[in-house]
Image 1 (cartoon, helix red, strand yellow):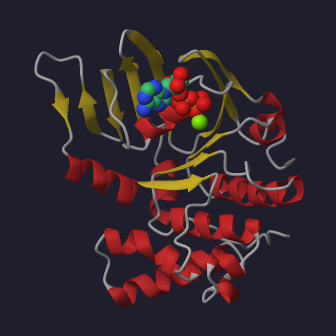
Image 2 (tube, protein in one colour):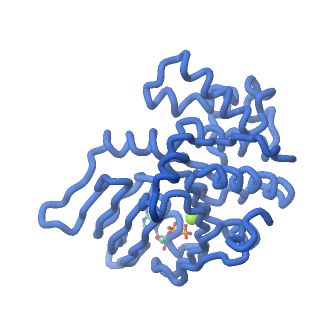
Length: 269
Ligand code: ADP
Ligand code: MG
């Protein structure tokens, strides 16, 4: 598959402007001493253990670490699907939760849902598409949740499907699509709201290596068009697409490094 130079996968003009106005790197997400502890009877599991982390607008980050190291817990907290047990989480200029203050500050369920629906695009290993709905209907779903009127939805959905080269598959259901095409529908669904960040948890985990490369071309392109992208992966060659690589071990950040190879040769995908 080929990405043409004029391609506008998920381009967000507002974000381009925002970026151009920046003097330095804009902070998108801030974790301040975040922990997520599970109490299982007598056993205390520190799924995340005192993580402090700043994510900037237009970062392209891969998160790696062994099974059970806390990667999904981290993504779930970033994605406002879970709340930490201590620490402060800030998204753009809003405090999502401050579990440290004397009176705990926490967004309510409606506020969290609003961030998830409007600001975060999720891509999952298992695609998570509705099996009986068409590609069009699957991509339309976040717009319905966000209360976008029908006539505006149609245009946005068709553009998102076009951006992932699936304009001619809008009436197909997932079972009528290949694995790579399903994941592209999921990417279109993640993009359709012009989110502030795209979170992909093992997006290539169910795909063969050729199809994985195809998906990574789209994620690279999304980043190039000023989106902020985080990918969790087990595979070093997938992680190497990112410009910043974070390694998690036992709920802590073990390493957080710049991918010099990628920064030096940004077009050498
Ligand atoms: P990863 O995605 O890196 O495989 P997870 O974030 O899923 O790791 O899990 C981190 C740790 O937290 C693991 O030890 C896991 O068993 C534990 N954990 C995750 N979710 C729960 C839960 N709902 N209840 C209890 N323990 C959990
Ligand atoms: Mg996981």
